[in-house]
Length: 184
Image (cartoon, rainbow, N blue to C red; front, side, top):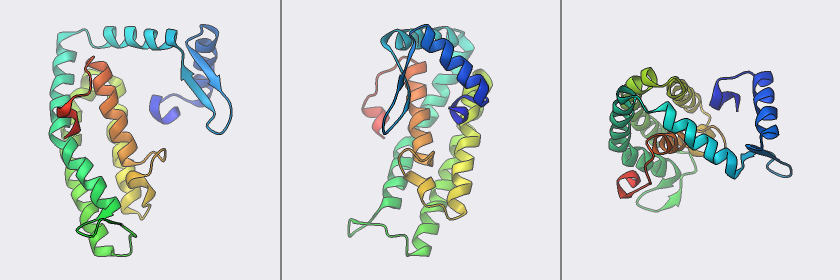
């Protein structure tokens, strides 16, 4: 949550306690412990998003960023597929071919530069979107440093995880439903 919010641990604990008291979140125990929004929390989140993006300049910046995102989404998804599956064999990438992996990493780095350029106006319009560029850059740095999980492993703060979070944040903020355009 610290990574997603930019808040410190004590601030997060206090916010979660207040949200739990207001029945906006529910604590989950077990294998994947944490918090989840309650129906009231989902409604409150929706209301906050509406207020967050009501200014015309903010709407324009988010729409421009969303359009930039869509232009790169299919490319990013294909790069992630190339990282995981070797063509033409369709076999999983065992990451033993250093030249192949370097090629795919550089494809991601090129897409990354274009995405960061598209995110800049969005981050200026809404502070919370300013958390995405350093997170994406950090994941790319980890990949270049040899951390193969940082590319596309689920629930590992991987580049793909962050990309999907950004996509969902854009959809929710703009009150859009996922469509064929979102699939790249």
